[in-house]
Length: 166
Image (cartoon, rainbow, N blue to C red; front, side, top):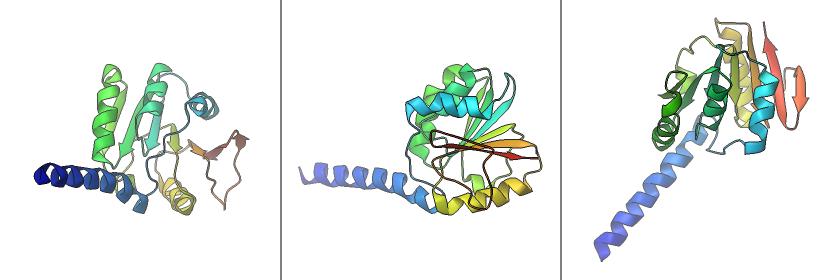
């Protein structure tokens, strides 16, 4: 019986660490609210065939909603459990959706017409600098809840902020 509790403790600790270590890179897993998905995609205003890049794609709900609108969607996620989960639930859209396991700060981003993030405030200026160096501009950024202090959003609706990079 002691082995059972030891294994359970190790499993719980592992899951806890997988969901908390990502804070050092951007944000813990906090999914966007379901009622915010439609306004976020409406705000970014992409056309079918265009590409959405989601930085910290979590459970894949934005990726699925983007695919349902006819967008190509690429999501970066650092938590391997969420990568597996989102890969599984986005499989039916595999021609339109790609889930990448990795740290988006250290990667060259693929060409995208729009970017969606739900980052913590301390990382927003770093994101702005990364987008300014992004070779595939123009691009639109929609941020949920947090702003880029040094930049004025083009539009604000229900906790969503649109930034346009030319």
